[in-house]
Amino acid sequence: MEYGPGAYGLPGRHESFWMETTTKTSHPPLPGDLETDVTVLGGGIAGITTAVLLKRAGYAVTLIEADRIARGVTGRTTAKITSLHRLIYAELIDRFGSGQAQQYADANQAAIETIASFVREYDIPCDFVRKPAYTYAESEESRDLVMAEADAARSLGLPATFVEDLPLPARTYGAVRFADQAQFHPLKYLLHLASLIPGDGSQIFEKTRALEVQDGGGRCAVRTENGIVMSRAVVLATHYPFYDSPGFYFARMEPSRSYVLGVRIDEPFPEGMFINAESPAHSWRSQPDEGGELVLVGGMEHRSGENVDTREHYRNLEAYARSVYPVRSVDYHWSTQDYITNDGVPYIGPLADGHENVYIATGFRKWGMTNGTAAATIITDMIRGRANPWTEVYAPNRFKPAASARRFLVHNIEVAEKYIGGVISRPAGDLGDVQPGEGKILMIEGEKTGVFRDREGRVHAVNPTCTHLGCVAAWNSAEETWDCPCHGSRYDADGKVIHGPAVKDLKPRGG
Image (tube, rainbow, N blue to C red; front, side, top):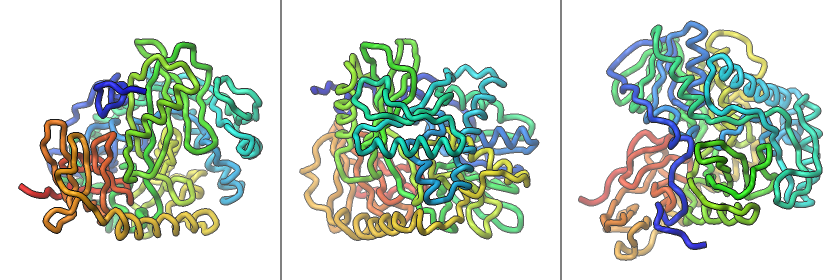
């Protein structure tokens, strides 16, 4: 396949379809110190939904976003609203027991109806439509896993069936099908919800990065670059809890990147949302737009910050899409980042013992539309002092050796050996080796230096040591960013933070 002169040598616009088809918000930065009932940090689906639910419950809420609301991870999702999370229920029953597996199932099914009720109540024009969701087997070996998932999900009361045939032209070996799931345009939905927040003491501030949280004496202080916000409670809905040391979340989650293409095909797309059971992941759904039907093809996940040419993931995804459908054009390409906990279940609830006034919602395992909405319901109930039936399975202070110990050890040994003290920390080459459009880590005058040469030949040089916990960031060729492989912090070519948990920029090198 020949690639044209578009961004990064890849086809289509390097932009999320959701972002391109909605306008940016223009809420002001925090003007200085203030007091509020609850501070919500993060303007994605978890943060916005939490703020709306708390305001409806009578609280004055201040939502703070480092950039613009709904344009972070939520703005790069494939936006499937489903409780079918690839293969998870047989594993949950085995590792957590049927009781907690039931909680997870109920929370995600309820989240579908929460979104549907918001759409109805506020008449939100967000392309919300009910569709079945499928996880399908691409081999005989996976067929048994898919059948077991259908049985496990059915035992929890989920709308699951095993089907032999799939309406995709790819070769499959059966699938688990969930009826009455949904999809939507996530930014149209969230921007409408966000419009309900300002007023009656509640407000939204953008372009305001939170730097520190202090919790003590029944009062919380959030220090930002623009002032201090005092409140009774703080919700960390920042995708990754930048204030994580009390719970050691940096050792309990790993960052994962995946890719999306928006393509046009020469035939109608079948009714449903689809994802395979194997690796690499292949996800499918369609979306109406002014140019007709856009098909979103996603997958090719890998650990964030892997020192590889990330453009290859887009190319491989395109090759896969073309192997299934006659692709007329590739109109969009974008990538996203998610966090996966050691046991595969999100952390939702109090940050840690002794920090009961600070709440987190993180580790959605690429299923943030329902898990993020469920998180908003759970945290709102906790702040209100109400019982919630789903808290146990999501409890951040859980420790289940059978479910997470092996992954915990593998993850942290890999971080220590590879990303802090290992091969990434031994750069080679010199400045003349760096071509226009290329980034490398070099040793210059005895200092490890991250170098990017832009297409005009200008050199951008930074200290590639992540300001979060000291891992060495790697160059992401597809996005032209420095990405930390340990905890997922991301920086632009000049070292400016674009994705936490880091809150400080990379230091520049040279003059």
